[in-house]
Image (cartoon, rainbow over all chains, first blue to last red; front, top):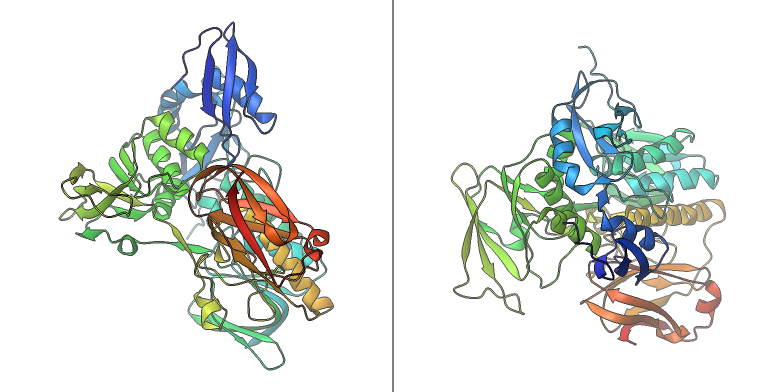
Length: 130
Length: 416
């Protein structure tokens, strides 16, 4: 759920960059974050800025043909807008890739026109001919 | 058939892999790694979400990526990996030598070693350990089983899902099911607070509008062939069901994320003392169990929040084993760590005061603005938010520990 952005508004949320779970208070001006309190490290500030327009790394699996596993785990190379996730999942469910797949291999380039890639997060070897 | 090694490591998950790599770097040249399944990495390959390795590799990785990094390092060592080997029995001979025997693809194997590291991990608790009665239909899985189905094989375990328990795996799987199009009806937690990390409550439940029912208990699973639903009841502060609060929730799959238990059978059978609080072995600051020369690391030692901690313990155990193999251990006079106010568990249990010590612990109940105080040495660490679900980890230097005159060190969590 995106927080509603108003000027001079204080937003409160929990930072999820690491397991510490800092409670952040971000003050907004002109729709942008102008100050952050409650963060225990600088990553909290970046998180607060991103949270005004929330983004997440998307992880899922896509189908594999000819592999020793039927699916390969994938992730987006960068966080992507949260509200685009349902559309992203629809696209991924219609993709099939051919084994072998190497970890880090690009599965989809420039995903949804976001200038980010979908990359494989594991190796899938071709199935051994019996 | 006997094979002789300096070091045997039981378990090829993050703790076992990290200890094998570290021991090799420390100059231990004869190492065997016993892994019961036919792949290495333990639970990591099925944990496809990010958030691993921020401490250990200073990088945000998914589980399979974390495992791949360790496996890359393992490749450049001469560690002998015996996959498909289940270690069943550990025995200490009169000279201090250890014998480990078990089964390897249906055949018996035995290894002898000077030191052993148990990194056997943990297992998931079943429905019967949390008193969920009722039918035994298709569609009841532990979170780990559901994760294997979903993320290794691409199979969604159901279309209407109830998750029991709000531990991290449960929360992460609730999000995965929601993303894959399942209707996640609820996450049901018996305690009045969530069992998982705060960040997982936010990014797994709140992001997907999945309801979290706190102070609620699933008492029964209904269904003749397939799961048809669960009975839910509210509980009071003493966790007793509140009469008249029963509700039925329709679903076709039940996922159990009701806690993890260290797999200590091998150690316990060999005579190692087990700590009731952690469920793992009692260890000293060398991560040595009460069986001399047998060390423990990772989730068999204590259920960790982070794989980074498991790997760190693996390294610690490897350094100790290397010292034992190369120079032998002097005799230490250990001091006891005593659980004080609002401390549910802490490892290590015994301190030699001869080296820096990393303590891992959990509080008993949630509190804010507290200090974890190590009384006898007057060291205190701030904890703005203390929750049972979030492990604390503090390092104390040997210099500080040497100040200690008492026979014990009391750890208290107190309000500032």
